[in-house]
Length: 402
Image (cartoon, rainbow, N blue to C red):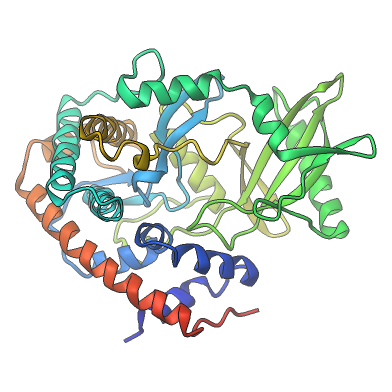
């Protein structure tokens, strides 16, 4: 029987050691961060629970309150949607729901939102999710139809220029434009790797039928972002339009690794060309509109997800609205609508259940009490894990391989 720190170490052993050290520090800062960064622990535990059978559906695999956010779609409009598909997989749809309900209890506890309000929020999520599922029609959220805090959030993002993000990530040095040396976000790489990345990146640009096929690479750096994904290889490219030196773009390149749920699901998975093919295909099935430049690329034996770089802070900050329960409820309703719609879009695709099966599931309430009960119990278990992990960090028990 492994201890919690041994389970975490075993999972992260194959990742980049120095980046894993950053991950350990981040997830030791608060219980919700620990929950976000230990998705594999959650599903390993859940798989032993013997939940009642629910329809097999495409799920994002790591659904929590900070994996909803805004992004610019390939139609250049801004959407509020699910935004992380690293762990996406065909699995019981109930697993997705248990994960997000648990995240409500853990996050709200950390925010000192009362237990009663957290429970009401979880029940509201379940009620709204089932309502949309039973209707059988996917919906979406963009600024023209959004309401409340999400509408204000989308309008703020929509009115923000790309220039602000670009300026925060770049500098001019000796007359040339390059990525800034922010040690918390963008790290220098050695010249050999830099050259190899640029050489591999150029054919990817040229393969596009739209921008950035008429751009050139100016710079590339290692990118630090996320929590659960820290330790994988990730880069950011600065590119410039050939015919207009005032036009630039930032492209994110993220290594794709197998879903941490894979050892625990019984559903037969499709034969994917690569892990990045899995992630991009599922993302396009589940989202209303995919992010700009979403595609795949192979480099040095690994597969990568490519997309136009998105701001990292475009998530609902519950700290700003924690004392306004009506606004909290509005956000939770929107998140439930988005989740249900994502599941509905993917029905009948590559082994997923039918729309009728998913709609039938939504008409029953027998599973909802089980979800709430498990999520509440697991919240306490996760806090125990976190305390043990934090203590082990203080005692310097973690050994980062490398």
